[in-house]
Image 1 (cartoon, rainbow over the protein chains, first blue to last red):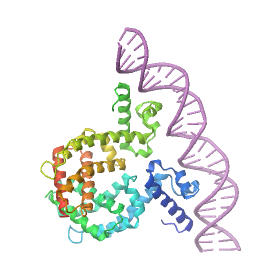
Image 2: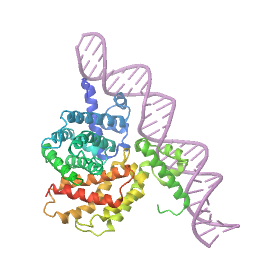
Image 3: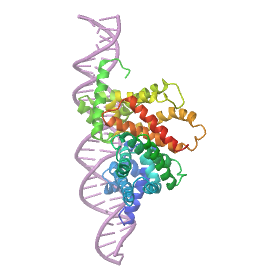
Image 4: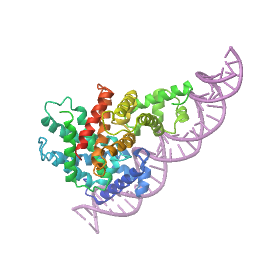
Length: 188
Length: 188
DNA sequence: TTTATTAATAGACATTGTGTTGATTTTCTT
DNA sequence: AAGAAAATCAACACAATGTCTATTAATAAA
């Protein structure tokens, strides 16, 4: 991402696009470096100039996405559950939309379960703080309701990505917010 | 599973146990046939007598689990959302508990995202019918709320498995039921 | 218990992808 | 235009793969 040299950017973009394509067809398990470089017509040696192996490449891509989301989250002040507490959720949906292809691939049928876990952790890290303020007395019992919501959010994201994002990030954020709030009522 | 010969059963059990162990340590990507057979002290050739490769082995294990869950689901009549509509959920929790080690591994950090999808599909297949009866007018708009609940259920399962199942399958089924019901109210 | 069957083992094999290296060519930046 | 850096090409040892054949051991059924 950082590199300024056109050649590096072009090579990495090329490889990334090829990987996203391959991930729609098969699992990362069955994807070889040779296969990827052959497909996008890049020398295999060039691949090793940038990545240690396929998994390293996947990880680097995930790192970038996670970092972007992380930055978006921390750009918002920690506020209790209320009217505007879902503004950071909207940002997340926007980031995902801006990286639709690779995100779909990473969360889809042949995706990476550890990326899924990282997304959950990101959401968790932030919203745990919020929840602690909103339901201070019940934190112990909320464990299950909370994990229900957490995974539920990821499910929402997956469905939204796999469709054509007909709904706007703003609308999705509002929906997410109300779903969480209602589910949480279970435990009050 | 079917085989009657003790040797086959012993070999398969051994390999399966080894795979579950390895999956707690690393991703399926980094697990080689040689590594697995070395660990459980089985000849590498023997592995190929039963499985095409590591992924084939994983698939066969998943197939068995999915089949068990599928049978459990179809053992229950399709009933509208009500007092007893969650009895099949209880069965699912029981099956998962009976296969705790491998299920934890398959849904955990180094798990298999496609197994996760299969579980979702199984739940989906059955509960879509139920939902169609419960909310017949709103089916179009329910898409997102539904996927929220679907993934939420899997999250619930993951959390329950990774803990020590302190809660009983029955309790979890009731909790699942009320979480779904509350979340669904969002869209009414 | 014996026998026929079937599974597991051991060792060898060609094949394929891996990761690395050094020399050369191409492309970029300034 | 010149120097720097990236991409290419060819070659390499290496390790895991998947397949085979011959041999040994364990099992089920008589």
